[in-house]
Image 1: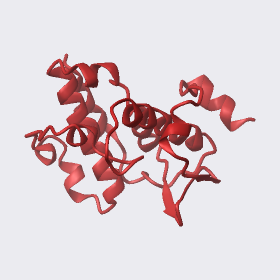
Image 2: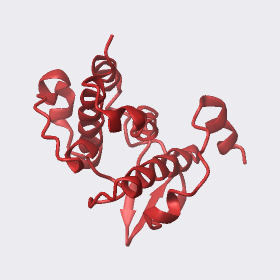
Image 3: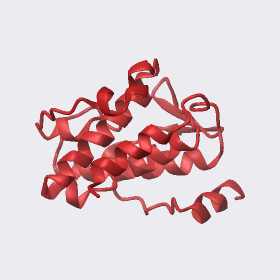
Image 4: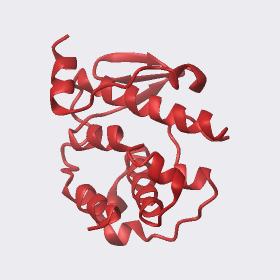
Length: 165
């Protein structure tokens, strides 16, 4: 089974009725890990994009022809542009991965932390250059700094430990 198909199944399995209603401390771990991965990608390839939240396929100039709302009809109804845009970027990245693109293969799990956060009902807010989630405020650091941070364990055990620290 290709990764795009698995990603479509994942998105279609999300309970959108509860999405954005959970503010667990582990959401910050997921957010920081995504930002770290995005920072490595943007600094490695000197991307000019709206870091940290961006569509990686489009940042590399790929215009993916994928009717996402046909494959994931619930996305059409979403009012939250962040959630919708993240899911679209994730699926387009998986399509690029399935095509054998080397960069997408190297960074295949770029969006995994954000998709986990969405699946868990997490929410993210931006205010005055800071990102708020899980009861924490995260000042948006430069990509160069974030690209040098240690990876965060986003396994179930790692997120559980984050919650209890």
